[in-house]
Image (cartoon, rainbow, N blue to C red; front, side, top):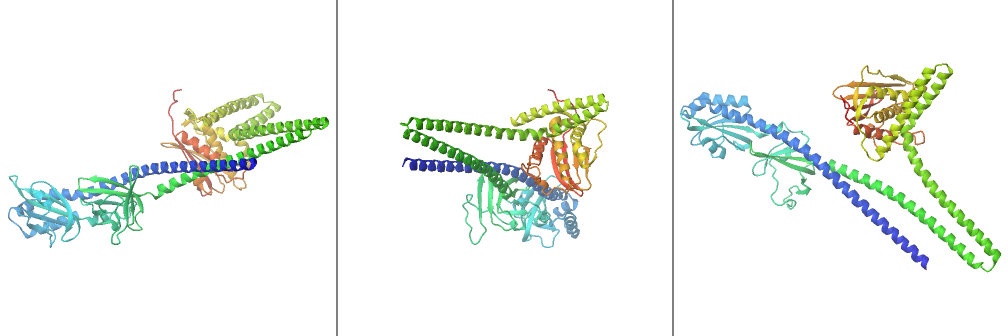
Length: 586
């Protein structure tokens, strides 16, 4: 009965632990999703502000030329003469020519009573009662929008016409069709529109938004009426999100930003789709959840294994105690049982020691794997220099052997620096960036891989620069990057008939090194820098997908950039580094 209760309690405890763990994973994934979404929204807001500012400046610039046209024409002698009481047929011809050359819809001359004396169009509409005309008749520049000649969308500028004594004789009105303005914007990526004081869209790069007006009411409370498209708003932090149903060419869910344009009396607005931001945030949250679940599964399996061993040990001790109690009255049997119990305890102790030793070996194996990844090339170089030194001594060339011994010493120092950098990298410490000779680093990397390239018959196309090229970084870390790239290139050319490795250095604003091979190319260049992504066979001498990821992190840490792409003859990696003119102070 006690055993059943214990088993049931253990099952409940494990179930509760799994539930708590899954809840924590869900909370962590939710927090990652929210943070990634917030960051994405902030970046999207910056881009939307830039697009809206560009569109606003473009619209203001297009409309400002009609204001300048109205101001200039207000001082024309024929316009002044017409308002002073002498209207001639050639006045209409003048206004028609100005409208044609200025791409205006109409140009009208209006007297103090609001009567149109002359106009470029034959059927000029009535604009004398509008606010912008009254403002011009009062001596100020007026502007406004509305319908021109009873149809279309027009924007008006009204400039006052002054007499010799400074009195206002009338006004000159220039109008333009807003449809011709927004026609030039159609096809832009982000939907941009401009609303008037009543909130109605007058100009947009999406035709379905023309004359659309945002419903009044609180955000998110407007119901669709009479088959009207659904519309509601929500907020994600400080960002306003619009949920639209205005057609397939507008985003269903978009970030909404506004910009006041008092110069033309409109408000600029932009809609940026938030679907890419939500997809990226969901991918990041899913990745974090997957990693946590994988770690939890491994931890759960390890715990279950340990619990099984503990239960087996407890059962064994219980049997020994029962047998000892049963044979206590018989001395011989007692000695035999005591001996068996001692041996069982010794075996248990050895098993426990073996488990501890296995754990130590596992940790040592992981450490050795990381160190061997960093020290493999220098050790190969030490071996090569040592063998060459033996041959030089045998040939009676001690000076060449001494050079190899010096190189071995340099390799030992370099391995010491590698171990120091690995220890600093594991503690997340920043390594001081100094001035490094790029040509010397590439030469060193080629020397350390020379044995394998000679064995494969690879031709090296590299011309060392005559003068030092100083870049920002660390000698060991940059050497590790180029060794990884050269080694990957050699791996890619195995089984290829023509094997050629090309290394070029291009000096511009920044310094770029390209390493090209004649291999089969890269199947997915955009994924080669992801951790654990590899196209090699998994094994002791193969890759585990960390070399290029480590190289990417090193180049990023010194402010550089690394890219991978395919060429007509194979794969190419480019490493862009920042130049450094002088040594930094220690």
